[in-house]
Length: 181
Image (cartoon, rainbow, N blue to C red; front, side, top):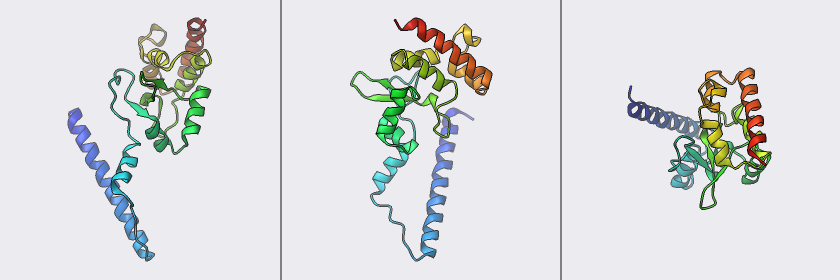
């Protein structure tokens, strides 16, 4: 199956799944004598799409990225809570030239949690005031430290095992101490 066919199949499956769930909700409400009020359908569609990463010119190799509003909607948290996570070094954010923050999707698992190992690396570099783009480059650049893989790929290959997480975290601490003056 080609990537295009796979994407089309995935979109069709998602569309059908959402439609089935909406129809089930309409039936549940009707059984209670209530009606589903979707409000502004375009606004609802936009909020649903906010859970998907957006396309950005810097998508390779670090992206795709979430923007702040999309990530807040997907995680179900406030902007303040997201910015607090960035400040504490538990979420990687990269500031664009026009001042906006974007968040590489590679750091998140399907449940929205930051992947083990990535969080430790982001924290190690953030504590040394290393900028998000540099952290992202470190996470995605192949290295002999990770057997020729990038830190992120190394974690994936080793399924974020405790040993792999420890290796990435240790390498991040060592490199961060050398990068920051």
